[in-house]
Length: 566
Image (cartoon, rainbow, N blue to C red; front, side):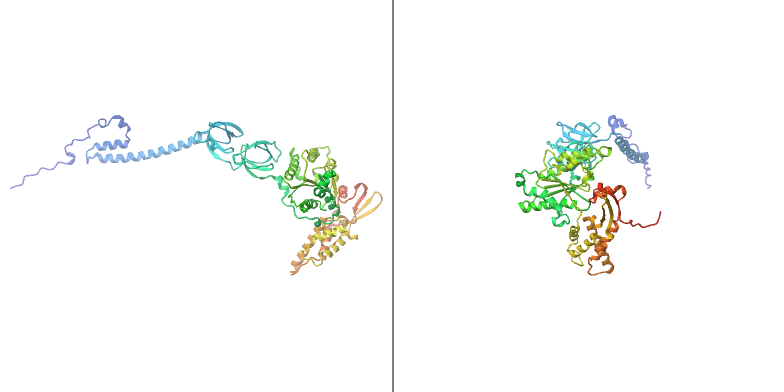
């Protein structure tokens, strides 16, 4: 029996439509407001969900969704880049913040700020505690001049010197260039610091607040921290000058009661004058050392010495009033150290350069104010107790008479050239026992001194004719000085060293021949005669009165490298 014929199954795309959402409009599925809030991808997903499974349009919707997703990703990236660019452009267009210096609070929400040299009362951002801001601190201000951030203390700024401490803690500062002084306040960092005049401080950029102590100014750099050991026995050939100094300086300090009983005033200062190289500076330093030792030996009290050494030309300054300020500063230092119990010595070398005789003329105008300032300090209301002023000069005749009058510079001590005995003593000082000497130093010193002061034709240097008709020959010994003797000994050491190197000697020594050769070479190198227009000044340095000299000339023609050339 034949099987009944089966009917073919219908194709999937011919299947009768099942009840679905495909024919339902989107507006019927969701309110319009919600539809507008959906993104494009969400709308595609919603439409795809309406399609029946395995519908041919599903693949198209999937492809469409991928394209839309890629486009939206690119759009998001472009939008982010555009927003970033807009932010950068906005920053470039926005005004810059201002950096100022916080001076003090004014109110609960206001602050006194200095910006570019101008003072402002600025509001403070409520997010910033006003108590957290300190005087001298940098602050950030917006375009409305409101403080929006604290930046801490600046690490840079100009450096100035403190001239005076005011009673309320403020500082009066000055400039080395002689600019106008002005008053500043201390920062919170320096509020409790112990300060004194002469210190160098760093200011903020607005120059309103002192932020940091840099150190001590130049004025104390002139002071010697310790005076070298210089007993009177270490100075040779100046017995008369040493005796005069001890009488003028040591006696008033060692016998105060006796001076007070006789109502004898203590000398304020003294002048050391004489030819160059004869030990004026050495005598000044020795005065400080020996006075301290004498007081310590007699009273048992060890007073520290303060030796302020100043070279005259250092004080001169092109700015008006600056030289006078330095003179005041020198005396102020000495008075300050004397109050602390120190023995203060103010030693001014080449005093004629700053204390010269006042004359009319453009180039002497500075002396017309500098000399009176020095006189005022010497005669000041505040006495110079325990302060010794020492002037040293090669030309005392050039110093203003107002400086040298009694009551200011009370003693004028002549530092002469050493005679033969004095020169031998100086040679013995420089020929120390520690040196490898071939003979006893006394014998070596005697031999070289005799050669130095020998009245022989080789030692003759100049011929002096006086108005009286007298004629005098100057020899090398007449122009001797401690500096020349020191140079001779140093040159002899150099000769001995070179000989030891050349001969490889195992026991090198300084011989008499070394000293005599060094003396000859030193004279040959210094065989210089002054020109005609400088003869008067040269005579004053050699202890001759130019008024009594008619003619000065060399004994023989000077040696030259070439001769016979016209």
